[in-house]
Length: 359
Image (cartoon, rainbow, N blue to C red; front, side):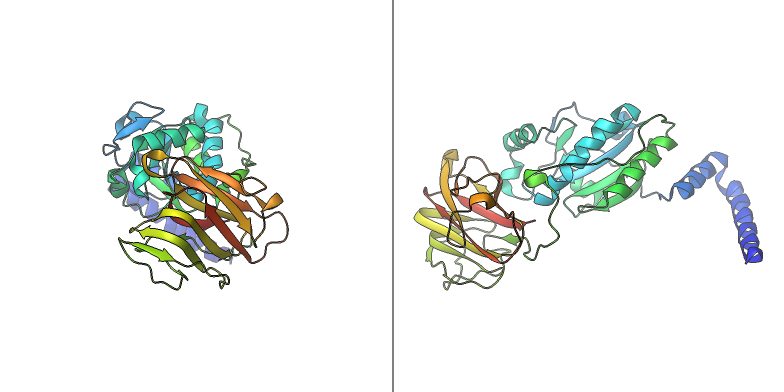
């Protein structure tokens, strides 16, 4: 076996010698560093020209960012996966800013209301995000990166090259080690190399280990498991019946609703939504009535007030109010997670429902 290792090292030495002739010493040094860190080269950092505006910063571009390690995070403010990643973005920005890290949170909308610059600005303030936010309402930056995911993280070295990416939540230790490796490549020293420990509550808390309900969209374009006896009628007003019994992950409307491609709107009260789910948390992306009129609601769990199982946007008696378009956390089970029937009844008309997510 030692003989085998020696042969492998000999081949490597010859390969490096050939690379030196072909690339030159400076380029070779880059390759050696990349090999040592386990990171590749995924191309040049695109510019951020397509942003319709910036929050927390003057407009930035790849030239201005040269010499900095950059973490580009694609997110959208009503996405539970994006929200659960936010505590890490904030922690890394605070921890490594002085060592040369710049976090850029590209806000790329999923729903129409997330394209509104005022809505994004309010969300960034409410979420206490202080790093630069380019507002990518036309998905121009998204397309420049050829991105397809929320959240998506791109790790860029000081020379403006994308060296690593991660799609979705999780794998935070690996991501932080990548940040540290790129900072070291750039000559940074003296920063804390321990792994960040994050404590978050509300919607930003990590998901439970027992989630058996998938993200489910309202509206007629992408919905699944819609169980009202009446078939959903696109672009028209229709009265629906909410069933008393639903199978797991089925949902139903009750009352007079209008179905659009990405949402359902309650036209008159009474109106309700029922969902049979299995997870610790239940969230709904909701929007208020026309002209932003608040919409009051009451939540039930298995026919009763949620009590200690209420979410951050509902009270123990189930009461709450939709005041702006965003994700609302309505249930957080405290005990053993089991199949439950969720019901939300609206006191006022005009509410729009976009999607259901779980955690």
